[in-house]
Length: 350
Image 1 (cartoon, rainbow, N blue to C red):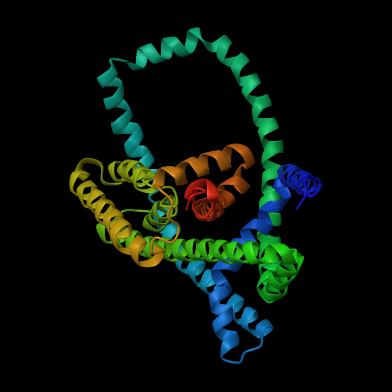
Image 2 (spheres, rainbow, N blue to C red):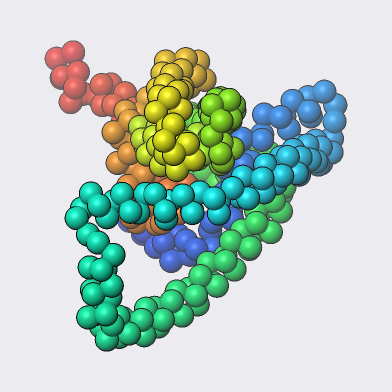
C-alpha cells in the first residue's frame, strides 16, 4: 500500500467520522437496533439450525418479546397505581413533620419565611417572568425530544427485524469489501471484534436481567414501594461500575425514610445489605461466569470511555463507548503481537 492509498483511506475515515458526528441524532434508532440484534442473534441462529426459516425465526422471537413486554406492563400497572395512591399521605407527612423539623434544626421560623417572601416579592415577580420564558423554550425543546423518542420506539423494531433477517448477507457484504491483500490480517481482526462485542452485549444483558430480578424480589420482600422501578434502575446502573449500587443506595435511602417514617432503620439495613450482597454476587459470580474475562477492560477504562462517549456524542456515545473501547483493545492487542514479531523488538542479530 503506497502513500497515496494511505491518504485516501485516512481521508475516508475522517469524512465518515464527521458524517457520524453530524448525523448522530438520526443514528440512535439504528445503533439501538444493532445492539438488540446482537443480543437476539443466538436465539435466531438456534431456531434456524433446527430447520425453521430465518424469517419465521425472527418473527417468533419478536412475538415472544412483544408478549413478554405486554405481560410485564399488565403486571406492573396495578402495582404502580396502588403505590401512587399512597403519595398524598406521604406528602402530607413530609409537610407536617419533616419540614418543621428541618426548619427547627436550621433555626428558621415561619415568620422569617413570611418576611423574606414579602421583602423579595418584586424580585420574585421578575424571576417568575424569566422562568416562564425558560419553561416555554424548554417545552419546545421537549417536544423535539418527545418526537425523537416516538420515532425511536416506532423505528427501532423495524430496523432490528431487518438486521436479524439479513444479518448473514450484511456480513458477506462487509467481507467482500475487504481487499484481497488485507484479508489475512483484517478478517481475523473483524472476527475477534465481533466475538468480543457480542460476548459483552449478551453477557451484560443477562447480568442486568438477573440482577433486576434479584433486586426487585429483594426490595419487594422488604416491603419498599416502587420496588420494580427501583430494582430495574439499580440493575441498569450496573453498566457503569460502582455507579448503580451508589445511586441505588441514595435513592433507596430517601424512599425508605419517606415511606417508613420513624421505623426506617431496619428496612434501610436490609436494603443496604441486599445491595451489598447483590454487588458481590454480580462481581464475583456473574461477571467471571458470563464475561469469562473476554473483554479485558479495567473498570476505570470503562468509566473513562463512557464519559468520553457521552461528552462527544451524547446518548449515541454512551451506547457505543464500551463496544468502541473493546475494538480499540483488540486493535492494541494485535498491534502488540505484530510489534513482538518485528525486527525492532527481536533485533537484527536474532
